[in-house]
Length: 127
Image 1: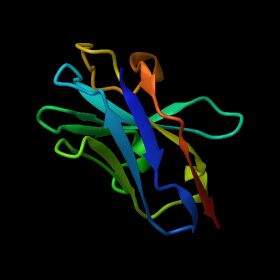
Image 2 (image 1 turned 120 degrees about the vertical axis):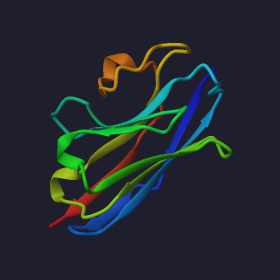
Image 3 (image 1 turned 120 degrees about the horizontal axis):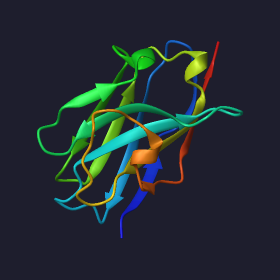
Image 4 (image 1 turned 180 degrees about the horizontal axis):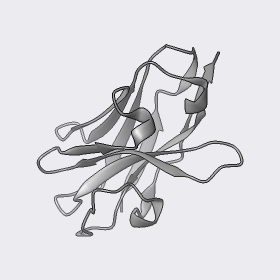
């Protein structure tokens, strides 16, 4: 069973940085990709960044390109999201997620394509 535990959230001022971590257990060679998502109050959950487990190719939603970096340490089974130049509109609960084993990852970051979710970590950016 896949278990995901996020950490690293907090409160920062605009322009600041945070690094989120996601400790993953139960993720095997059959997991093709992982992703980061966020959900602000009153809004739908949206994909932020994704990464292919083999090869390391990454993809991002336009609003975070150039500011956020997703990475994966396979030896530590840990997914990261480095967030720089944070803006108030980045304020949200952030979740990491993984698809079902052997599911093909399309390169998009749609919540419906992911089956396993962490409990989330809150990021608050003040102006």
